[in-house]
Length: 344
Image 1 (cartoon, helix red, strand yellow):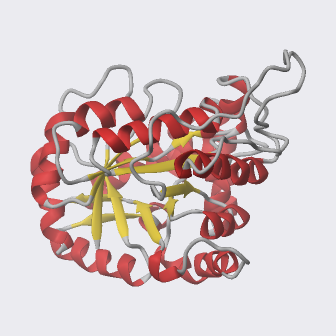
Image 2 (spheres, helix red, strand yellow):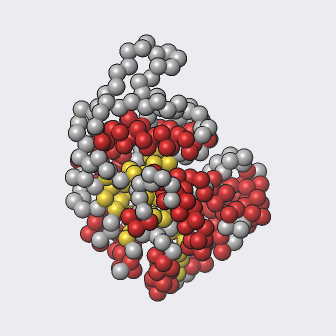
Image 3 (tube, one colour):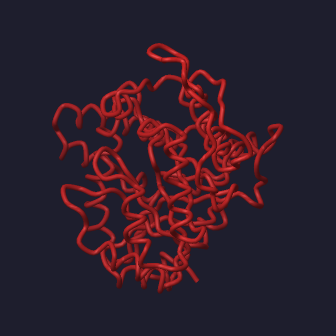
């Protein structure tokens, strides 16, 4: 099992010890370091800054939001980071959700699967640098000839020769159609709220994508990087209480009631009643009551909490389910070293 350090995105201020965590992850043998973005800090800047203090770990985005940048702009970011890091970039992409896409980026959210396919295709054309990049698709036409065009757009190739035409592209995906698309067109899956007990369901989704004509990878060459809260503690009860509040936020508040992808994940796990109740309470301002509804089992389906021996045994279960990398977070360098010791 490989470990990736998830730095996440910044809260009100930049984290004080991120550089220390990144250096500790490299020294402890972590495979990768990932940064995220929501509607504050971006993902590429922290990787460039803190990644410059490393030599070996891969530097991944988990995830950059497609609506934040055109595909050509994202390709520019990725090829730049890849050059600066000596070929260590991993480009993780995601569609985000309608509240962010339409409320923050001012872009339409409709047809996320079609947009993803087209977005990845344009990026691969840029990285291949075989010809000036054109795209006939409706979402990211190149050259642009739509409303407001002056008709002077010219197909271009990147000035910089990309270091790797096959720079890995991983997709963040939660639903069956998106996971199947990921297996078809991407090099890896960034899985959030992965539950090992549902591995057979995930495998069915993945196999659908691998079986499609022109699929990029096979299961043997495809990476599954699953986010997991791994907490080594002799007091799991206290950690469960803390995480109840976090789960209530994501299930009840991170998305519109009509379209909350995180909530849908837990409905598929069999928590329909709890998800509905959490959503009603959270959106009515009763956050403590919403947290109280979150059962232990819901948390432990997608997290590992317990003493060192329990954590070690659970990691084996995740590996047997098909996960090739666990994306974990840590508060300090000592936690990074503790987690690395359990992965072996």
